[in-house]
Length: 130
Image (cartoon, rainbow, N blue to C red):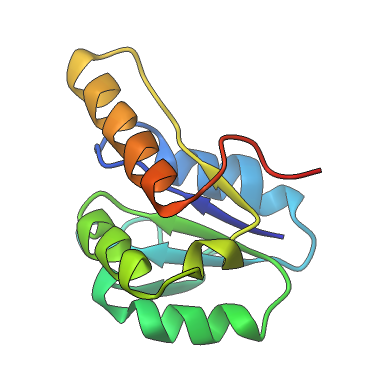
């Protein structure tokens, strides 16, 4: 299973959800951070590859050869990531699930809605098919 954790806003818990909730529960998963701002934080156990949003093509190639991954899309790279996901038509189908963490603050709620709308415009379904 390949899970992308994404939100246009920072401070919504993307990395926390990715590293501490999802990653430990996916057998043989790789943790991939799409981030530049927090790239040096928390190095150590559970740290995997780190790529930038504009390296989407390389990420796509990597996802082709692995079965399970948690892709933590940091807000510093989310615009490039989404832009390139649009250009690589159908690339969203390589993800089995998109998780969009949310918090109660007004700005983050607005950004969360924008994230949902952007993913829906690409054809990402609201719920994964059964």
